[in-house]
Amino acid sequence: VPVRMRYHLITYQNCTDKNGYFRSEKKRRGDCKYSIEWKRDAFRIRPNTGLSTADYVIQENKSSVNKTFRPDENINQWFYATVFRGTHHYFYEDVYGLPRPQNNMEIRASNHSDKDNGLFETGGSTEVHIYRNDRNSKEITETVFHELTHSAHYDKTSYSTYSNTKTIIKDSWACAVAYVMTVDMYGSNSRYYDKNQYTGLIIDLNDDDTTYAEEYKTGDYVKGYSLQQLWNVVKSSKTVDAFKTNLKNFYSNETEQYLDDLFSYWGW
Image (cartoon, rainbow, N blue to C red; front, side):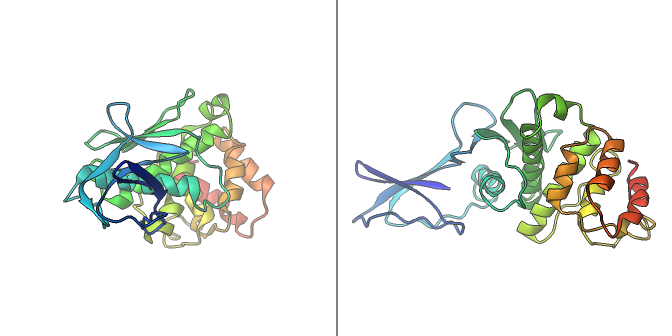
C-alpha cells in the first residue's frame, strides 16, 4: 500500500512490501507525519459516498510507525485494508494465468449492512461494490475475489457476450476462482455456493476433494481441469449445453466418465 511520509515541507512516497513494511529512501532526523491512501495505479478504494479515495492519516509525529488495523479499534480502516488486500492480490499477484479485472477499477467499500455482499454492474462500469455486512476478513476477501472475477470476465469478452451468458455459468465461475484464491490466502474458504445460482460445479471440475462423492453419486470424482482450461470454456460458452459440449470437446480428462453425474447433481 502506498505510504506518504512528510518531513517539514518534504514529502516522500513509497509502497510497503508484502508484509506491510515501509522504508524511506533517506534517513530523516526528527519526527515525521505519515498517511496511507488505499489505492494503486490499477484501482482505488472509495467510501460508499463521496468522490475521494479512502485514506488514513496518522496524526501523531513519529520517527517510525507500526500500525495494524483491527476491527475492534478502527472498523472503517480494517475494512478498507481487507478490501485492498484482496484487490491488490487479484491485480498484482499470481492468479494462475487468468485475466486481470478492468483497469482503473473503483471499489466502493460500504461499511454497513446491505442485502448483497457485493455487486458488479455491466454497461461500461469499472465500479465494484463490496458490503461489510458484519463479516470477517476471509468472507469479505472472498466476495472481493468473486466480484473482480466478474469484472475480468466482462472485460475479456464483450458486453453482448457477457450479458447473454447464463447467470449460473457466470456466478459458478466466480465462485470457483474466489474459492481457490481464498484457500490459497487463508487455508480454507467460506463455502458459500449453493445448488441454484452459485453452484460448486466448476469448483468440482478443478479440485480433487471427494468428500461429497456419495452425495454426488460418482460426480465428485471429477478433477484435474485447471483454472486456465476452465476459463477457456467459460469465455466460449453462453449456455449450459454449450459449456458441457465445449468442456468435452476442448479437453481430454481421465475423469470425464463422471461428468454427467456431476452436471446432474448441480442441476446443469
